[in-house]
Image 1 (tube, rainbow, N blue to C red):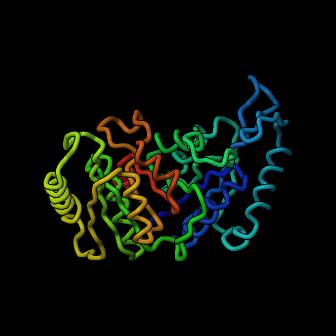
Image 2 (image 1 turned 60 degrees about the horizontal axis):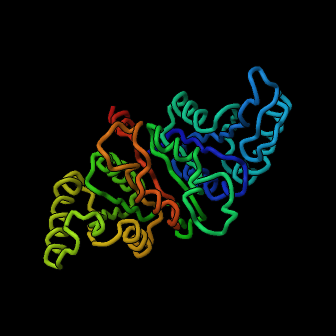
Image 3 (image 1 turned 135 degrees about the vertical axis):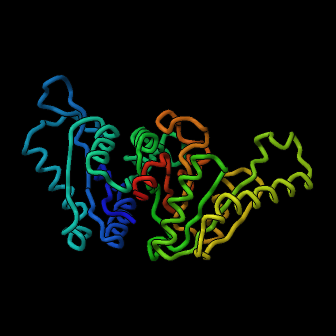
Length: 309
């Protein structure tokens, strides 16, 4: 399914979990893995210094510094490189991290970007919007390939991915996410769980919907899933359909936990606007912050079209 994977890392401990997923996935897919780190932002025009994106410190820029950074990355991921180093490249660049990650992904025509939700630990102890780093948000918004976001150690990824949860709001963006989820399930040979949460807070059913209204809406959602997604399954029969009412991100997390999901696949946004203009959806954001397993953000249908060619 993947021929080339880009793992964007800051080299800090918060990237340990994304690193494990990236190396394991590359090995399973026999894919080329690019381990990529952005050194920092130039301090001023023609400067020989960069401002380190992690610490804010100024560092002298040159061949020696870049070689030292790559050596540090090699030491950080020494165990993984010993096992899968023959198909791994370590690269670095100077600039704004999101810009450089997207540029490299485009130049290398990567099939998947793997990264953490942020490059720094959550020092406050709580989970806030600030943990969603600007780099991750910008990459997820503009990437034309799927972005796999890992926010914490995966407690269920014993065999990498064995239960895939696809969450839909029936938007056009969700259609591209479904294609990714179905392709992944077929490639791995694992169950695909199709899930829709009826948002009782949206007001679509009125302020206080009756049980009759809720049941009718859930029935309609199941019928839409059959027509929109199940009809595309072909001979693939390892799937389940579930619809529930409630706060979408809460129900998604509950369902993923019940099914021991180890990969959640969602659209980056739900609005029918150009992908490059869409901000990350609030439901996806909440799921990323709280999920115990990786979350795949799908923002653009181009990867599916390219695969079909």
